[in-house]
Structure formats: structure tokens, C-alpha cells
Image 1 (cartoon, chains in turn blue, red):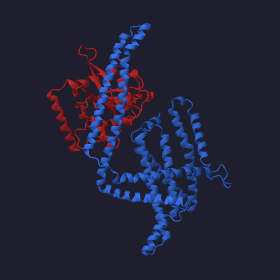
Image 2 (cartoon, rainbow over the protein chains, first blue to last red; image 1 turned 45 degrees about the horizontal axis):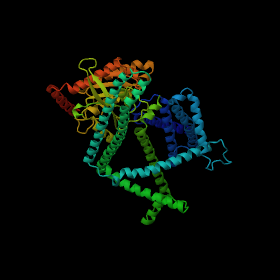
Image 3 (cartoon, helix red, strand yellow; image 1 turned 180 degrees about the horizontal axis):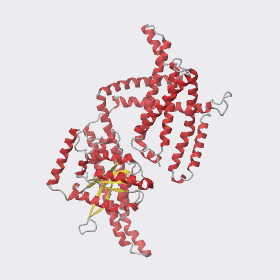
Image 4 (cartoon, each protein chain N blue to C red; image 1 turned 90 degrees about the horizontal axis):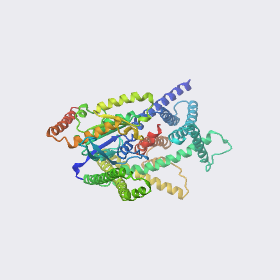
Length: 380
Length: 233
């Protein structure tokens, strides 16, 4: 009976997560586009729902909620579904959509998508070679093979993301790194940008005028036929086409300059806004957090280096050591084991939640900053 | 070339609708072979014969300013973009016929470009805030262009065309639906080409031939009207 109740709870929470993923997809990621292939939205929401359910099961495990047999059942179910989606469904659909957009391969889409998927599986399998995954207990075609490979990729990605986030976060929040930008700087840069645009315009007008003249003259030139006519037309239009090529080169260089100026101006505007933001209360709070966080990151890097150099294995995690030190220093009666587990758990929860939030925010930023065309091409 | 001699037309629209391809087609009469993402603004020049075929025919150079970016960009990008909206003589609004959201964003684009002068904070970015009368008395001529016409399936064509007809009524502008990879749509003699040259003629007329004082006070009245409507909100 309790199994039924537990299952109902799990399914309800899964449906909730699915709905949240769906809404997030529609409102945030695809705010400016129309979704034509609902498969993508469904797969995204399913993956998100099952990942959040796994996280929920871990919390239940620590808290001791729900009966242990139903937790085990749901855990295995979730694991199988997620592995199925991650290894079979998602790579296949990515391959299918990429292949659909290449005109040459349009005919045999399914075949080429399967080929892409087999290539992916080959590299995926090769990934496990340097690691001691294969053991007589498991055999070669078992779920441990898949999980361990997914784990390797996942841990590497998380480490990279955390490292990047750890360095990026203090840089974004600390005001020490902000250059001093005044309104006159921005105005001067904007003036330069507009001057460059004016120069581009005047050169393009010259090109257009020359081309029109060539076209009108070309009408007369075309009347001369035969061998000598061809030679004459080549020599007489030689200079104007050379001129055109020269001006075109100058225009290309100026356009590159205008792009650089535009990006610099955007950068300066962003810095000015950050300066204004850092003067507010929220800004000051985040600035303080930034200092604290950067000290923590530097300390972690230092400790990791020492551990690698001296080949030490860290025995206790920082939270437990911190509490031990506090207890010994302040002499307070404290059940270290009990509280350290809960505090570590809360910290881990915060880290996971902020990394999920950071991941979702990075997803939207990546989408905005560089893949507009890519996504609009993904939907044929 | 004196600065008074310039005719500037903005080409606005969401990212990926085909503005760069359109500008290339209008100016070079050729299809753009390798479209890439526009950073900042790219300008091109179209040679236009004003009042073609009549004895008053005169050649003008019209600058088409293709401003890149999306309506939801960071505020630093929006404030930098505002630098290109000075002294505009005409606006071409481009939307993707296969993507409804790009047409809806056109209201915000037009507000961003037109309200640059009247709002103290620089940009009004709100969806339903446009004012139909503002567009009726608008001194800046607008043209609506829908791209990727060939990619609409035949059964949806009527719905799309009705929707764009409503859009062009809202903006009080003419509309052209085409495919930027096919120069056939703007071939000489087609109704599209006629609408296009009528639009450019209107831009040139507004720029050069309507400078009587009554028109000027009308413009400042409109500005005051904008302020009032802002206060009522």
C-alpha cells in the first residue's frame, strides 16, 4: 500500500517538473521563435523532469522519507529511463536535425542519422578504455558500462563548469575589475563609430556610381563584337574595375573597423551599467560576496595543488573540519557528526541548485549571444 | 557630399529574418551567397531613380542601414544601437513569414526606433503600448516586408497573408512578401517592384519636397501628444 502512495507522490512530482521544464523552454529559451517540432520540447522537458526526480530521490534518501523498497524501485526506473534518453534518443535526434539541414543529405535523412548515431556510440564506448570499468562482476553488456561512461563525462563537465563559474563569478561581481568609464568616453567612441559608417557610405556610393557608369558604358561596349572588340573592352574597363577592387578592399577594412568599434561601445556601455549597479545595495552585497568567494576559490586551488604535489588524500571535508575547529575553539557542546552531515547536505543542495540555475542561465546566454541562426536553422 | 544630401532608411527586424539578404538583393540586384550574422550595423547604397519614366526623373542614393540584433538584447546593446537611429527618413520593417513571433516583435522595433527622441530613458520596450494614431500621423514612411515566402506550405498561405494584411493596416504601411534568395520577386514590372519604388519615392518626397511650416508644427504637436499618452499610462 505504501508503495502505491509513494508512486503517486513520485509521479506527481515528475509531472510538476515536466511542466516546469516545458514552461521554461517556451518562455525563456524560445521567447522569440516559434516551435515547429514539438519533439524537441518534449525531449527537453522529459530529460529535465527525470533529472530533477533523481535529485529529489537523493534528498528523500538523506531525509529518510518514503519506504526504502519503493525508493529503490523508482531509482532504478529513473536510471534506466535517463540512460535511454541520454544515450539513444537525444544523440539520434541531434544527428537527425543536423542532417536534415544539409541539403546534400536530405534524401536519406534516416540513414545518415543512424550513421551519425553509430559514430557517437563508437566514441562513447572508446571513452571508457582508460578507466577500469570492465570487471568480472559486471560483464560487458551491462548497465554499469553505460553509467560509468556517463559519469565520466558528467563529472568532467561539472568540474569545467564549476571552474569557469568560480573564476567568472568574482570577475563579474567584484568592482575592483571595473575600469572607470565616463559618459564622454562613450560619446567619443560613438562619434568615431558614426564617422566610420559615414566613410563606408561615401565609398559605397562611389562604387555604386562607378558600377552604374560601367553598366551604361558596357551597353555601348557590348555592341563591339569580334576578336578586337573583346581586346578593346578588356583594356578600357581595366582601370575602373581595378579602382572598384581597391575601393571594395577599403570598404571591407572599414566594415571590420566599424564592427570592432560597435563591440567596444557595447562593452563600455555594459561597464558603465555595472558601475551604476555596484553603487546600489545589491551591488555592494554581491561585491562583498565576490571577495569572499574569490578567497575561497584561491584557497581551494592552493589545497588541490598541495594534495596533488604531496600525493595526499583529503580525509575530512572542509565543513566538518570547520565545525571541529569552531567547537574546539569555542568549547560549545555540539554533536559534530549529526550537524556536519546536515550542513554538508544543505551546502551540497545550494551548490546543485545554483549550478542548475547557472546552467539554465548559461543556456539562455549562449542562445542569445551566438546561436540565433543555428537555432532558426534547426527548425526546417 | 553635403550632409543635407543624405537619405537614410533603416532596415529593422529580428535576428535571422533575412535583413542582410534583403539589403543585398535591393542594392546589388544579386542574391547573397553566404549570409552571416550581422554585428552592429551594415550599410549599403541603393541607386534609385526618382519618378522614373517621367521628365522629372532624378537619381538618388538611398542608404539602407541594416541594424543587427534582437529585441531582447542586453540593455547595453540597445543603448548602443540607438546611435544609428538618428535622422531617419524611412523604415523598412522585416519579418519572417514562417515565424509569428518576429511579426509581433515588429511593434517593439518600431517603438524603439521612433520613440528614441521622446522618452527620457531612451527606449520604451513594452508589447501592447503602441498607439495606432501615432502611426497614422507618422512623418516617417514605413514599409513592411515578409521574407521566406517560399517556405510557407500551401495550405497555410491564406492564414499567413491575412495576418500580414492586419499587420500592414496597423502600421499604415504597404507590404511586400518575398523570398530573398529569388530575384524574381522584385523583377521590374511586378507589383512588388512598383510598391518598392513608390515607397522610396515617398521617402524622397518627405525628405526634400515637404518643408512647409505647417508640417513642422504638426511634428511637434505629435511629440506633445506622445508625452500626454505617456502620462496617462
